[in-house]
Image: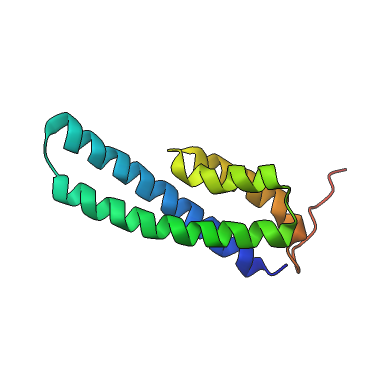
Length: 110
C-alpha cells in the first residue's frame, strides 16, 4: 500500500474532526444564543462535503488494508462523533503504518 493512501486519510480525518467541532460550536450559538444562523448553515455545508471526501478516503484505506466490516464501519462513523476521529485516526495510523510500502521497521530495544 502506498503511503499517500494513509496520509490523505489522516489529513481528512483531522480536517473533518476540526470542522465537526466548529459545527458543534456554531450549533450552540445558533440554538443557545439565537445568533449565527448563516454561519451555521455555511459550516454545515462545508463539513458535509468534507465528510463525503473523508468517507471516500477512509473506505479506500480500509479496502486496501483489508479491514473487517465492523472496523470499517466504526472508522466511517467516527467522522460524525465529536472528538472520536482524533482517537480513531491515531489508532488507525498506528495499525496501518506497518502495511505501508517503504515504511521503516521499528527499532528493537535491547
